[in-house]
Length: 477
Image 1 (cartoon, one colour):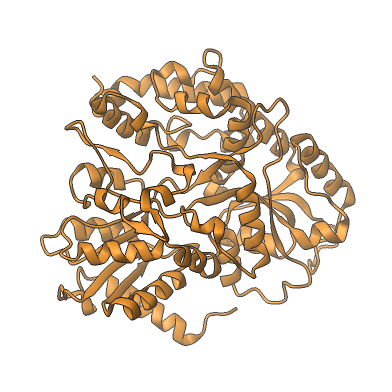
Image 2: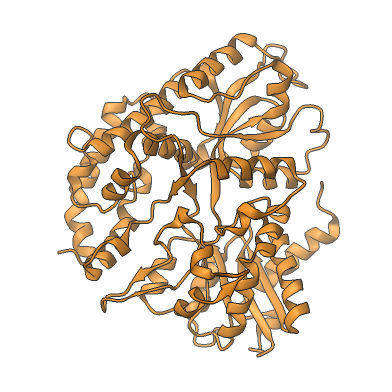
């Protein structure tokens, strides 16, 4: 599906509109127009155009959407202005916590108790997000300043057509996954269309630009081994000692989960890699590898690559993360998207209209629209009730529904009695997260030859060395 010239021109015109602070039709704060900045990446923006069209039909209120891959920069600039005319932000950026604490996002407490499709908004949020709709203010109160956007489905994706053609079964256990890799290597299936007759299908392909994609399966294995309650306790970040796998049993399970991943990627014959997503994902669709660690946005991105003649060699499938050996719970999964948000700037003079738009977006109709247009899952129960004729999305929903529990990396702030401590914990979470810091993920080091023990020792040393500074910065000391 190649982009037409008119489509490309439309994108260029939109980008031009987004460059000045309030260019084009955002120069006037029209009370009958909602102004929305929406991130435009993997899931695209066709879905929000459909929601806007229905909203206008039902209310008569016009909707001006600014789609942008650089939505974070636009939002930052606009929030710093005294003349901000924005009404809704839909974006990917953990910085929403800072905006909430600075009072730049509107309080959405009342929205939680409003009804959509017969249920309160707070009850529509998927349990994956637990208490993450609540934000602890320093005055000792809990409020809602953002709603989650997606319940991203991450893990292992595979070429269903290739699996069917070669009689490969979807692995249900980690041991079966290891055996599958061995089977694929031994099969030496030629890459269709390759000029090199010695080029064979690899078990995996990955992109070094987004090495965090490995998290999605690794964190699920971690939860299988450690159990939900132990992970919740770990993410209270009581001391730097929790990042010592020799002292903390829960972190030791994360080390085990990482070791499982390492066993797959310690053999260079098991994978091929590329420096960027586009190349890796295009090669995956063109049959260079059987599997890929990724998120459900992969489907929409491949559709929009405009690759021709995929029907004979590629069909995307998603597998439930194979069960770890010694798993204590195989019905739990890690949900991608804790850094995504739907928010209303506090400066908006149309907050009631913005809330009405959000209610339509998270309704059963909105969830179904997102599934069929964005090919992703919104973080609301309507997503699990949606109908679709798309076989891949049916696959995604079925696997999503097969888990009884899910979690994100948002710390359990509402379960902590001391609100001041909760606020500090939330700030600390931005610095620590699960690995210690974003740069502390061990995957690249391990692929480059660092041992598991040394990789985790590096994380432990880094966290210990910065812990007191982090505590001071977050108001914990």
